[in-house]
Amino acid sequence: MEYRTLGKTGLKVFEIGFGGWAIGGDAWGSVEDQKSIPAMNHAFNLGVNFFDTADVYGAGHSETLVKQIIKDK
Image: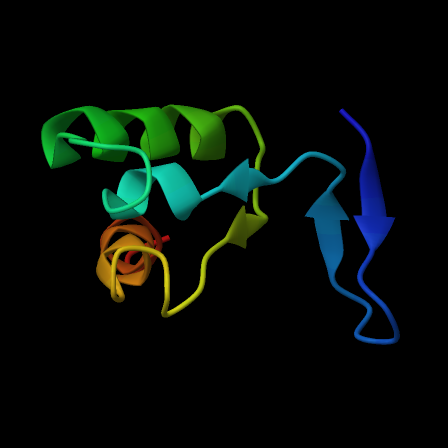
């Protein structure tokens, strides 16, 4: 796995991020949270620590799901 330094922060992030647009559920049709959450947990367990999300992805739904998986990690 390859990590890179994020700007001047000193944080090391995985080169491949988990895109959260689709799990927001608005632009890509129906998405089930009970499938999205395990997918994000699996990515995290594989070393992914860069999750892309924005308030416009499902009107904030994507951010809510990402928060669920990272809050205890």
